[in-house]
Length: 371
Image 1 (cartoon, rainbow, N blue to C red):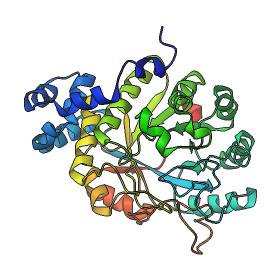
Image 2 (cartoon, one colour):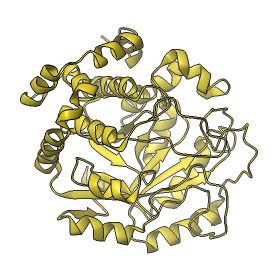
Image 3 (cartoon, helix red, strand yellow):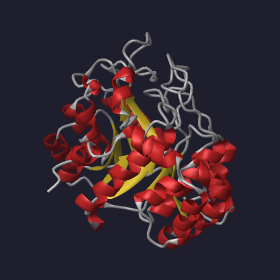
């Protein structure tokens, strides 16, 4: 029996997977589109350069599949940055400790001030984000934050440092519903280059985080790779491989995939793999055609026009009103953000855009009492 995804990962090599993707032909793409059940080999074909001429067909199929499974609905959520303190050194991130920026961690009063503003905007699904600083924002801090937030939100997600299984088991009774953990890149050889110090430099500890989440019984697990850090097609294949394993192993949990395309940030690096808008459309459609059940989430990193068009591509979750600095909702003074927001529209404006396309913006779709 496979004990963790590491066993699957060790049987798949980066260079071989990359070569297989770039060797796919139009015939492989056409066969993938014809099937009703797709394999990981089909996914490789759908994200390959050979699939570019089939983008319109992929978009139509993705739209049909999404409407069949999710209806014409878009889930709305908002990120809330609790802290920008971080012990890691990452080559691409504004939270990194080698960047000289003011550090801030919200206290109870500041958290509740943020809650008041966010609730006035209509949100019921919140994503809590911090840097990776165990001593400052560790399990006890998260427990306290969840305790403060639980009375106000029906769905609370967490995007923080990877934790142990026991930690996740401690947090779920406090209202934790979803945990997002991006591997950043599945290229093990290059991972160390981007994460030279700190706990995050442990590639396999991060890789096995979704296993710990599954064993802890977390309701939803979110995956993703940072698009632009390494070859996006190969990283996307390994994300799909990871998703496939998790769904078969921890079948009681739900899953989501995000598309964090790297944008300018404090201390940022030049991107190794630049992804065009058309290629991101291809990737979104490929995930939906490959997996009809997975939720697909798109953040405000993307432009207004792209997000408008993505509504009909297969996306199920959209953020809005995003502030990426701690205390950014209640405090209107300028402060350094982790990365630049591209779509600065409000949630109410996004709701109008969604409705105008014949879709329904959903502010609440899940409650623990309904489990």
